[in-house]
Structures are given as C-alpha cells and as structure tokens.
Image (cartoon, rainbow, N blue to C red; front, side, top):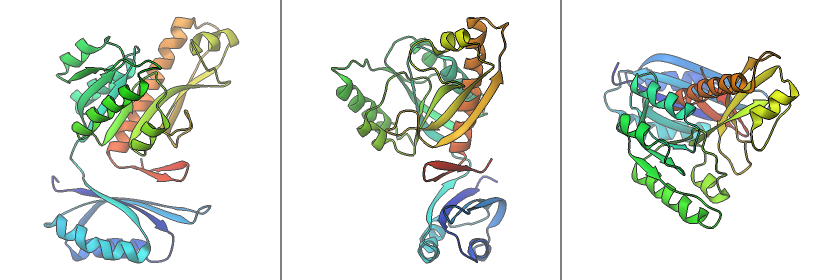
Length: 281
C-alpha cells in the first residue's frame, strides 16, 4: 500500500507498550502490516518497528503520538515506507562496492536515491555519468583535509542526504565530520582472523594462509572501524587461492555485506542500542 509508514521506537521496557502502540494505530484506522520487537535484558530497553497503512492524516497522527511517546519515554521516528532515502556515496580507487550499490539501486533492489558521488580521485566519473549521478572530485591531502571535508559536507547537505555510504572511501574522517554524520554514515571494511591492517591486507592474509575472510559494515564513529556493527559475513578460503582469488572473494563479500547494511538502514530496520545495533531483518 502506497500510504504505508514505518514507526520505530526505543524506550525503557515496561508492561503495556505493545498494547499502547497497537491501540493507538487501531484508533486511527491503522492496519499493521509488519511488526517486530525486542527487549534487551542487559540494558532494560525495548525496541520496536511497526509498518502500518490506512491512516488518512499522518501529520495528525504525528502530533498525537508525542503524548504517548512522552508517557513511555520513547525515542522514535516515523517515515514513509516507500520513499527512497536520499543518499551520497563516497569512494576512492576501488569501485566494487560503488558499482554494486549503483546497480542494485537502478534495478530497484535498494530503496535509495543516489544524489551524488564524492571521490578523492577521478577514476569513477564515467561510471557515475552512466548512471546519471553527479560526480564531485574533492582531492584530500593532509594540508587540505579540513577544507575538503567542509566541501564534502556542503555537498551532502545541499543534496539533502539522509544517508552517507563510504563505499571503500580510503580516507580517515575527522572527529568533527564523524559527529556531523553520526547515525547516518555506513562504512565497509575487510575483517580477517587474524586482522591485517595497513597496505595490501589481502596479500598479508595470503602470506599467513587464512582460512576465513570476511567483511564488516558499521556506522561511522570517531573510533576508527569500531562503530556499531550492522552486518558481517565470511567466506572460506584455502591454500589453493592465489592473492588475486582471495582479493576477488573479499571484494564480493564486502559488496554483499555493505548492500545488506544499506538495505536494512534505508528500510529503517536498524536501531542503535548503545555501541550495538538491533536489526529487525
């Protein structure tokens, strides 16, 4: 139904929350199409996602909801279910995640509206043009980092982006930029056991003969690669794989993990729970 909306909320757990939410929607002729909930026994917090349709006056519902939300101490958001999320993609010189996201978006597999691509290199301006997406080349050096980030934020704001995806953007964001993008920026990186940092991680992994490689998608925070995790996956490897095979396998895993994280975020299925996430798949 085209008038479907998604309500997400979190609050201290107590009796009667589900009854209050469902009753509130019923009184306004809302038909619940999907509902998920979770009570975290460690934090004592309750999380809920409800997709509903049939409410004629959403703005009136939004105004009335404030009273109920205050009674339960809720943090909440309300979104149209079928509205693509305005998104800006950042990339450097590896384009596998960028290409995958653009294709999924074009194919209707991701509910995002890619407003712009920002890169510190020119490599993918033709790819951007093939999808009719504006491409912004913003070089970054140690001396120009502050100015470059200011320009990037200007583009993100001017495009009305609600989501920023670091699709293999190989620059460390400043603490100030991380704060500006808190809760709406997703990053992807490889995850090996053991971990290999620095240049050529797949070469390092090959030298150590790893048997599992993987990828982690997480929200961006000032703590490098330590933000709340949204999705992870692994692929098996063995002695027969060359560095090129291992790299290709890793790139496929990264693309799939990032796509799932973006999909769940833009469908409002991810709720922050301190340093963790609750994901209603």
